Image 1 (cartoon, rainbow, N blue to C red):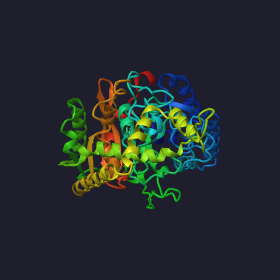
Image 2 (tube, protein in one colour):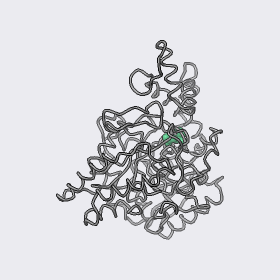
Image 3 (cartoon, protein in one colour):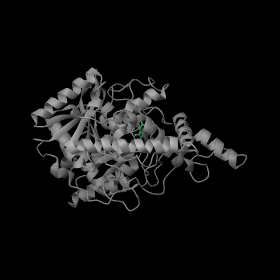
Image 4 (cartoon, rainbow, N blue to C red):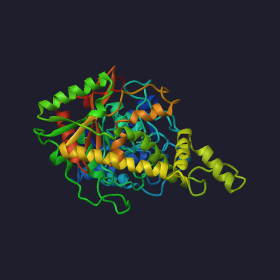
Length: 483
Ligand code: GLN
């Protein structure tokens, strides 16, 4: 059952080949058996899962099932879950049971899904390897000496290893796409504002966006359908109808124009380039026309991001003061001691580094030189994309510079770690939708192809990805140790 797509599982449920309870038990058993090696889950919620499954089976019996009724899934531990601890990968929130559900969690529950548990992640979603988690690193199911990517590394590893049929992730600079690429699954970062951020622990508010992580584009479409849409509780959520993503999935690609940003291919590793060329050949057979385009300011995206994201994080994380909720140091001498020790003990090294950088960049006298300057660069990058989308329907490139790297390989060198998001970050700065789609392997490690769409063109992106997945089976492979 764990190698099936959501659409296949939904069909099995409707035809009574298995119940949601059986399906749920199957995945709980796989988690019990395999997660010791992966560390993908921070919290498993078997009682909640079985209660959800029972409700779903009742709905199925009444003939009231929707496309996701009875499907188990797991949430990245950044999404608040009512009464279920939500750690965000941090000691700071180790003991935090939120008093409400995030909108994404509530909508997926309303759609009849079953909650298996909460997934490991980099602390406060800051990282590209899942090694900054207070709960320890996650391992890549394709090669357990390698990282799964981050920050949604638990989500990617759990889906890849068949511990859950699907998961949620969040993407501030690549955290859905990069781990999806490293673990050989499909991940979609929607347009900024498409999916509500309410109840999603904030890292960098102008960049954060939640999205689906699953085996296939078709599965991502099913999940996005339930997750997307206006939310009056999130002032940055966009009031715009949600299209029927399933309706256009199979549209023919004849005459579709896909741009190849020359900056994405200039210094690309030859083995990565070879994988992408094979994917392009597949697309040509489907009638796609490729065209070189240029994003001249793209080289500024990592430096701009590492001013904007830390600045916003330094402001967002000011709320963890040991007073209101979360971790509190023992026996504070006075208020200052409470603040200082709570934050010194509650946050890990990468989070502290970001807070320090952000506080510096926002301080009086430096704001114009750093944050404001970075915002101007952000506009230039968005304009680059706007020009490209006047000529093409989507862009294609690598998701990452290399396949998954080894655990520990980049932990001593933050800049090297930051550069692993060099192909994903610009998409967040511009607020565009982007996907990573499995496209091959290098030395047994999966390679992701990135597809970037125009604003709110998730339907087109999913269509382009799905037609490719009809011709290929990269997304169907299971890591041998977890097959
Ligand atoms: N790796 C990037 C960072 O550390 C992006 C993380 C993310 O998208 N949440 O900030």
